[in-house]
Image (cartoon, rainbow, N blue to C red):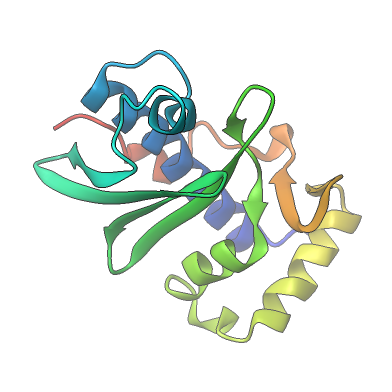
Length: 155
């Protein structure tokens, strides 16, 4: 049986990931991947703030990724993956940090690990071929009509 709460939280996480790309494009008027704009082209500072709904979102590039702090409740951290430098999957630890702030029943990371293993067996998620700690939500489970899609990049 699919755990709908985890699927909704994964969709919520993915919506924030999508939003970060929009924020960079809106704030810096770029058409290339943000990590390339920051590290190779030096168009974007390696750390700073992005304007979002009359607030500021703190960001910091690191290694192959970037960490975004929307507020104390919402921290999104992910890596970009070559060769296209797009979203490189959901890292378990980062997702657990996100989930446990929204669903206290996942305070114990082992409970989340067990549920993710179950979702992997049900083909709801798949692991990255290069890392057992990174997973993707299969496209048929991405919810474009999710209640979490109210997050947008408008001021």
